[in-house]
Length: 256
Image (tube, rainbow, N blue to C red):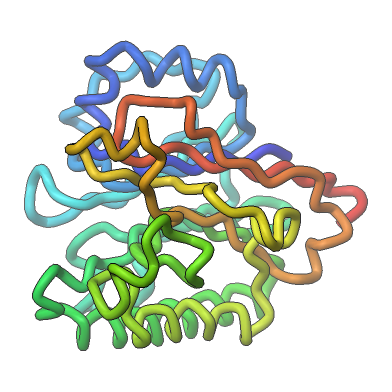
């Protein structure tokens, strides 16, 4: 099973750039998770017969946030949000249930440069973890997306400069660590525990991407019981079209 996750920073924009459809055709994922779609489904013209089952969670506010899951096979069930009204108006979570597992597309709130949303972000982190554990009580879980945090110093190019800044505060990093402590696995770090210079987001100025001055903000996480089936976890920095690049998980479901 191949799962690809990508914060597209506007699905209509990445389609217009004629990048999205060729990317999906080349990667040929079983399940594609998207974040920051910035659209309601009726606003999107998308000819994607390879993935006819499309599940959207859109923000109440048009042109903002949003997540989606596109699949080759139909989901048993779909849920938008995490069941907490104060967090579910921005379309930040889409869940699709398949035979052997849940797949969850996640777009975690940014704490903002002035940290004005940090308290809300911490509450979000607690609610998300509770939701994921409730899913895991039913069957195994893969959840992926833009978590808006660099977990450890190896996950960003300039950790000393950015210490305490949004995306690298102790509170945000602790929220992510709570996912690890709850038994979920960061699949990329599982396969590449000490590898530096692997990032998924770059500022759109100053040649940051060309210089690889980035942050690893995008993750594919999974229940630890899936570890025997972990084949490959990848970052695809060569894929342009957004300020984020896609991340990939390949699972051998029989082994898991």
